[in-house]
Length: 460
Ligand SMILES: Nc1ncnc2c1ncn2[C@@H]1O[C@H](COP(=O)(O)OP(=O)(O)OP(=O)(O)O)[C@@H](O)[C@H]1O
Image 1: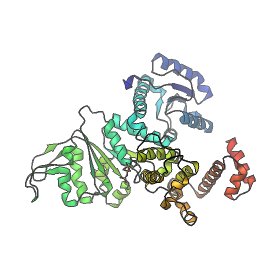
Image 2: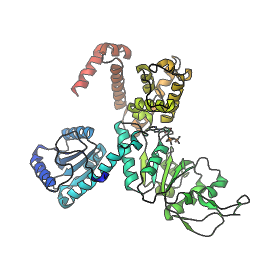
Image 3: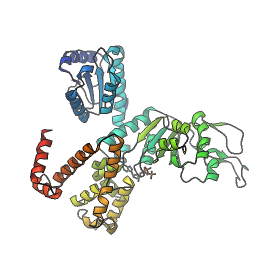
């Protein structure tokens, strides 16, 4: 039974030296409560319980917390102080990635809350290791793993409508299918998929509601619509942002009440499905401009999942490339990908995200000569970076998106310049395999500058 398997280990840490005594008391107390996994004290395990008080959130405490977050999948903070944490401090902790902040004052509930959280996370972690996920949803970067945890938790523990956001080709349909597959309803039926961008307006009613015989000239027999077909299962409305305004109103009632009438019938019918919607549009902006109904938006996004673009998870490109190559070659063993090809794959722009990488890998597979590693020669003409294309294109290579995101988050020009410089230095050193003079040459700067930067970085 998954639920009975504890997470591997739970460790405890005090962020304040003055709290080490209280930490020991709390540890003893948790031990008495026989919570699974406690007491391990290694700092590189699944769950951390961090003891803090409101006075100890200084720079060094935040740095320790960040280090803990690097090592653990989940962190619960126990606030041992007398006072409730001020909102801005609690918010700071949540933004850092802390899962929950429990006030020690509510001691009678803490053990049960921790145990419940551990049980839930245990199920999530074991599900993440299943073949269904590890063989089909490739990626191991922190951002992707965190997102998958969120998806699994939603799928296993909630029936609320889910809205999946993300650029085209980021895996929205794949995630929708995963949510349906992991849904634990005992009487679960099928997933019904409707692409809202392809529905002909005249057929909209029939597609969603179904029709009676004779309802239209061509309605020669009864037709079940998507609401009936999705009963007890899930309804996936892909590209929901493309649904015309007049058609959005018709969706409201069935989503809210679970009742609908077939076209040409006066009889109310019941349906019960999990609604999953997806879009690459900014629906909040659409709603503000009046092209998407605000009330529909509230109903479809009880839970929101934001998928990262491929540019935001570059570390996953080698694993994804190998996965798509395996699919394209239709075999489990695939050739090694030579370093220059990997470098090309890592630095290239992917406007179509994972779908574009997938297509590229099938083009590369097609050119593979059948033996040895994949070399640059396997790149089709169309994918080759020519010197004339490079200068014009390099800025589009995710940089514009990154700057847009930085500005939207209030990051100023000074920090943008510093970060861009740091990244350029880091990459050049990486590409030069640690040889600082070579990196300096690549960057067109003095060796002294690179050495100075390197020294500073190592001190950090
Ligand atoms: N994490 C992943 N691991 C492996 N394959 C993936 C992953 N994410 C997406 N893919 C593959 O990438 C392709 C695009 O994914 P999908 O169709 O789910 O994207 P989408 O966001 O729904 O696209 P669109 O918005 O254009 O409909 C599919 O072939 C899918 O199998």
